[in-house]
Image (cartoon, rainbow, N blue to C red; front, top):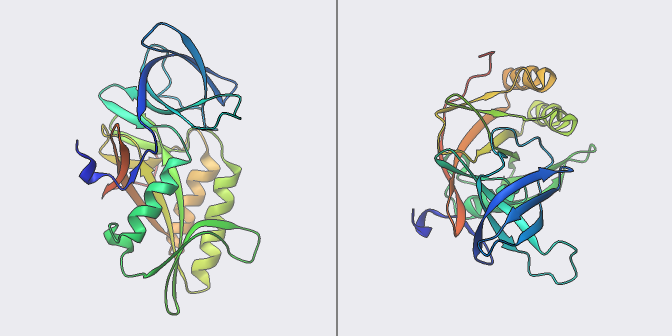
Length: 241
């Protein structure tokens, strides 16, 4: 895998280690190559089921901030044959870079790309794309859960995600495009589906807002040791498995 397929590069090299445990949601202990144990920050509020098995290979990164209590971030975990991007701050950086470079075909044709834009009704979205009076709102979610050959979201109940779906439907009703973009950090899946058993309210709402015109765009992430890219779209299914 070459860096030519990467939209966003890590600002510092990644270091390989072994996951000992992930706990208290935002902490993980890893064993480095020299045998020392390091506690790192895990920027992922989800359950990380299917990609947090003790003994898995991981990639960590020095955050470069001497004032931080935890010097390193947990960036990637090896799950089966796939490296999974588990840092939920990364997808927005990847998608933002890909949008500005015009590398997401389904969202091309918008010369203006703004990040973290409020809709004026209490919600804030990851991106607003504009071309004159044409507007397209984009919300991005990181997908790490794998079941069989499917990627699924969410891996834990998400009230915030549900709110975003309803707000996207409202924006679509006002005449704007509204896109729910899932960056799927799994090279070992073939399609996407909402996780009905984990969060039936979210899964049901996704089907409802799609019926109201909200677009679903599951993109396969290209995860490498030097960065992450936004790859091709995957098929999706909205019903129960």
